[in-house]
Image (cartoon, rainbow, N blue to C red; front, side):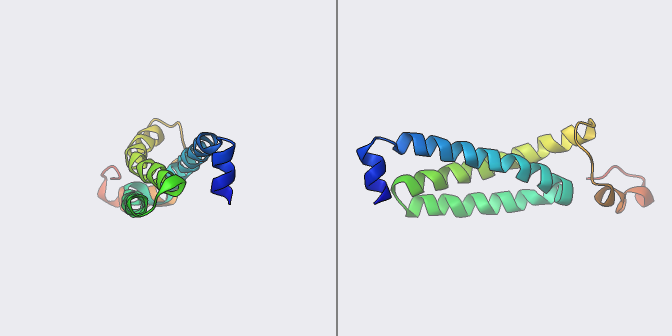
Length: 113
């Protein structure tokens, strides 16, 4: 029913564009929070999510397939963004998690990984 409405009024492109914008917008805070609480370990979550939504994209069709594909590659892109976020934290542009930075950092004298 919704698909017929979108097709009849040629709104599929607009809906896909809006949903893509929302998906990408959702991943920005996920990267920031993921790096803050988990550091580089959140990359495994993004990789797993990306693989699962890529599989879902291959198993579905139409708009759902497109949105799963957008979500998948947003997950893959987030892996790179976590590394960039780490650098932004190092530069002082974003706050570092004081609890995560102190574990093993002061005792060993090494920089956190």
